Image 1 (cartoon, rainbow, N blue to C red):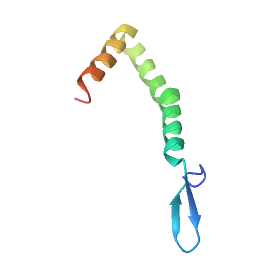
Image 2 (cartoon, rainbow, N blue to C red):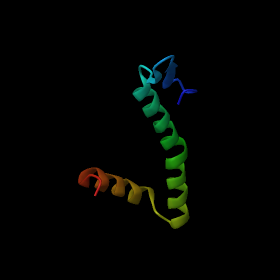
Image 3 (cartoon, rainbow, N blue to C red):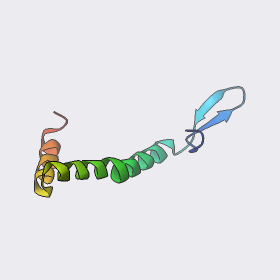
Length: 68
């Protein structure tokens, strides 16, 4: 997190959270989700024969029902 600029060392105090750290972390997590996680889901769905429409339906159901 220090390499990414989200934390910094303050002599005599310790580690501090940088301004904008939440946005930086959110941006990095979004990139990982879109480039890695979602890619893996789509590939697995293809292997299992899950259609795009089925995936869309499942996503819509999750949005409707929350995290149940």
